[in-house]
Length: 61
Image: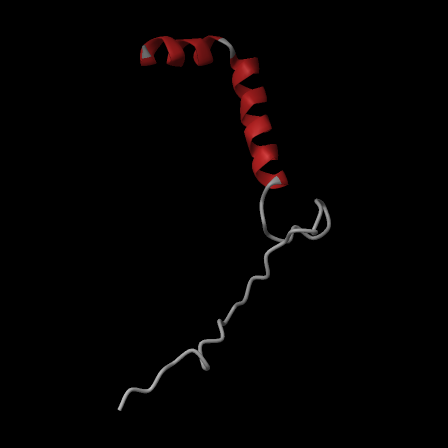
């Protein structure tokens, strides 16, 4: 079965490349990170280089 799928994509290169481009564009469109204004930043996730872990520590005596 996998051989048929592989041979299908090897024979139909236009379908393969168009499917690849569609998957890449869908991934870029749904990525939650800021993309410098190319896509919508409405739902972007803030990325911290250094996380703030100072106040989350507990001291146990």
